[in-house]
Image 1 (cartoon, rainbow over the protein chains, first blue to last red):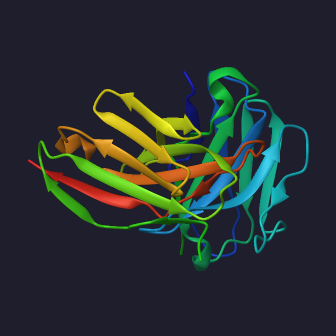
Image 2 (cartoon, helix red, strand yellow):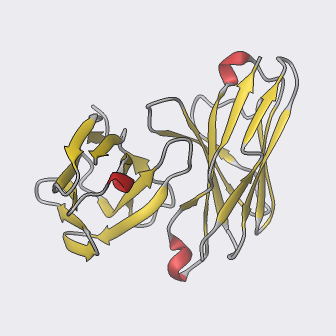
Amino acid sequence: GAVVSQHPSWVICKSGTSVKIECRSLDFQATTMFWYRQFPKQSLMLMATSNEGSKATYEQGVEKDKFLINHASLTLSTLTVTSAHPEDSSFYICSARGAGGQYLEQYFGPGTRLTVT
Amino acid sequence: QKEVEQDPGPLSVPEGAIVSLNCTYSNSAFQYFMWYRQYSRKGPELLMYTYSSGNKEDGRFTAQVDKSSKYISLFIRDSQPSDSATYLCAMKLGSARQLTFGSGTQLTVLP
């Protein structure tokens, strides 16, 4: 149980284009999803928290117009990096948390490596 | 000062050794304490979590929380090369959904 998937696992895009990353909870309903960014040899930096059907809450310093988050259903959240630039290249990881029981903790997806050329 | 401090390592040990990984924290209100294992280019995997002070054991892994010292530890017995990964401690307030992570310790177990 508690499987979270991400798609794609790896993406290369040109500067100025937009990229969408999907995060799915496969065997539980995720009332809350989190999006993190991780630079090499560094810890996870929380970008935003989203609850199903609500607007995401962004952490300080994260541009909400650049990193669009949609949590349209209890099993799917998407992160769209708009007008990507090379400095947006990073490892993006989502996590999901259920409403109760064993799914109270955060379970992480495998991550998406974004390279912007 | 960071809320959670973790020695980044790298830590290299021979196979079979006992490994001790540690984190200190400054916010005494933290109630839940987790350890995640992250293999290279993968998302973190929840290893163990504990509530408040005490020990919790799961196979070769033991998590220890000392709230009076604001110190948590993860012990790995009979370490294996497959344990080579980055270990992240994380903690949260009782009512919070967000986690506060340490910076991670990179562990290599040599065969």
